[in-house]
Image (cartoon, rainbow, N blue to C red; front, side):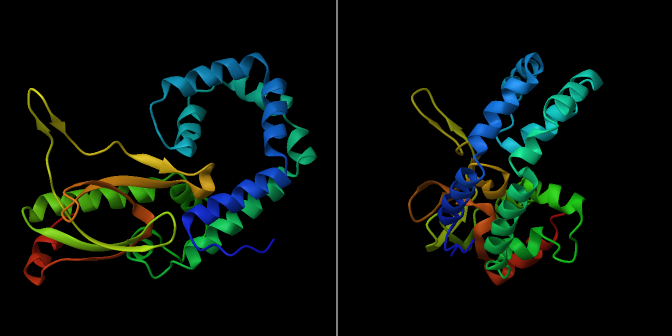
Length: 235
């Protein structure tokens, strides 16, 4: 399947096409019917879990499943993965994600969060779970707090592939009787784990407002030369 992935939105559109090709909605429906009562318990646990990343939800919930529930899931869905070529579906999704990230391998974010020499399962889970994005986002938060009231000059790619130049700074939560100003809640773009990327808010000096930035699509981060020493002390 040939795809020109020019943006994160393009990646999502391509994954939608793959979902249709492999009839993923039918697979999910049959899966829910096959699992039966066990699915009710799992769905209830998913509702309780407050994690916003859908892949991380699955990781979290797996630790709460009993051996009996796991056996039920395994036996009930044994034939579905073959019927719907699920392994092939995952391979195509992963190939699109890798193509998307390969074209952005020189981005600041890719250099920081991804060790390109590692291709094992643990690294793949680390990436797909969104852990890498969270670590980088937390690091930027610490840098902004450390260099306050100074700012960072950043370039990032928005969801449509446009490069945006802006300046971000630390801004704490402000609460008054009539007004509350605080960072926006973290969001995740995407329809599945393969296009799920963290959107974290930062205070944009140019707009005097909070903006969402796709952490994995940060192209470059720069600051005044005399601030570099301060940043290097952050671990």
